[in-house]
Amino acid sequence: MIYKSVLLALGASAVLPACAHGTQEEESSVVRNVILILMDDQSADLSYLGTPGLSTPNLDRLIGQGVYFSNAYATCASCAPSRGSILTGMFPHSNGHWRNTITPTMRHPDIEFSRESSMVDQVGIDESIPTMIEILREQGYYTAITHKFHLSPPWKYPFEVRNPVQYDHVEFERVITKMIQQSGERPFFIQANIEPPHRSFRGKKYFKDMFVDGKLHNPDLGSIRVPDYMPDIQKVREDMQEYYASVQVSDACAGGILRALEKSGRIHETLVIYTSDNGMPMYRSKASAYPSGTNMPLAVSGPGVQRGRMVDQVVSLTDLMPTMLDALNMPIPSTVQGESLWSWLSGSGSLPDREYVFTEYNSHGPNLQEAFPQRAVTDGRWYYILNLDPTKPQKMPDDLIGAGAWRNEAYPAILAAADVYPEKVKLLTDMIEGRRPAEELYDLQSDPWAMHNLAGDPEHAVMLEKLRRLVSERRERHGDIQKSVTEF
Image 1 (cartoon, rainbow, N blue to C red):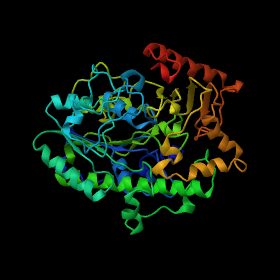
Image 2 (cartoon, helix red, strand yellow):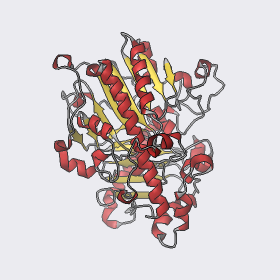
Image 3 (cartoon, rainbow, N blue to C red):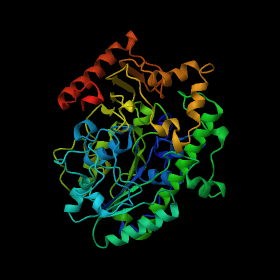
Image 4 (tube, one colour):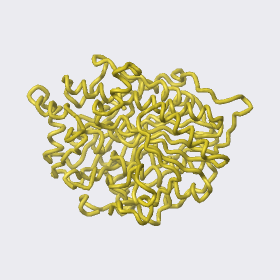
């Protein structure tokens, strides 16, 4: 997020050479297929955006041949709610999938993805809501998914093929090649979920496979920029190094996916979308409504899509479902709350006429000690957060504090650095000890990491009232009036 202004200044000059798109005769403006490349816990960190110490050549190349949205926002910075929003075009408080859920893994038998499943969470989208996968299956599409499912209830997402490939770029190329071949003459939709940069980092096999033997460059520790809201101490710097290294693994996997598509000969008829479900696995990012957790990388490339464009108008990941359906010339269900971006992407129209987008947080998992309900709105510069239960302590999710196998040594080191970095550590301890303000207002232009709350500043009272009113009116309009997560 902090580096997006660099690209906006560079504009089209930042475009890198495009991948092979076939011969000129093969070029087409007709979209038949979609590949959705979905990262797990990646903030808007890319070498294309000037992130220090990071090299992401495959994603840079994809972005350079399409459109990048610098102000794209997830609906919720937790995995399952965000993914459910992408495939329903709805917000978690509206579709019913408001927290992470217990679901079958890719290795479970088919029955666990049916109504006879023994792994059904009480939380999930309502039966009446059509999903992207249901719509495509009804239209005869081949549908496939990789890495993890994390959607609830499972039968509402009837993928034809599931494959557990997670982080091996060679295996991704093989798997995606096989999926495209299996589709035959049918159009296809492939949700290519990639595991990195989800924790643990160094505890994952890919660190041994991809870095120890030198296959990928391990980011230089000294070149990494620690987010401003975190103490710049050795353990934090090492943690960020491992996060960036994991982003590079995900980039290699994306490269394998794109190579498979190029070799298939069907790239000229395939829309490729790249994004992430939520921000990096650090506090005030993942499992929060702060902008580091909600501002997502988003790129779109494919037949008919404008090339070499950077746009800073705010968009929502709820826009992806209507955009994909629009590109495939299919009707958009009335339940969808997002808006199609396709007419602008294809150069035939304009972007949705809106100034703001919304996001939220409820609870990361079933443990309501992790719950902390927030509602937020932003225009890309001003960012307002309403804390619905500001005095409630919040337990950080295990993968953020490094409990068990998650291997986060930075978290205890941050707490121990309170004497040296009192204000930065206070940002964390206020969260876990229940000392948050009722409202927060940030100017991301001067404060991109959202550290300095302006809600009490008389100079910004007009902006505060405007954004407060927007959130209040929307909550009333959506019936989103609960005061705490326990009221869901």
